[in-house]
Image (cartoon, rainbow, N blue to C red):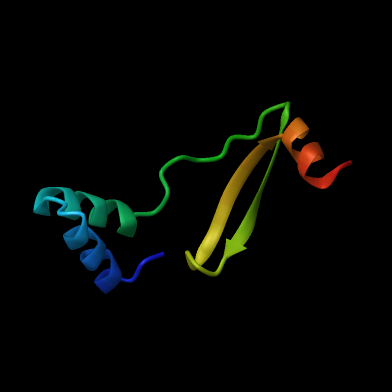
Length: 71
């Protein structure tokens, strides 16, 4: 993830409007909103993200899991 300074430089380089930059800043600093739901046909879990400094929830169809790990 970009540091605050890198993000500001990116916004300036792309000429992003101040209101848009403020909106993106709020999104960057807020926690995830969507909750992972366990259903009959998917696998769910959490993995640590050093970059985000938190655990990230995931959900995947069994088919996707099979393709990734070849089981």
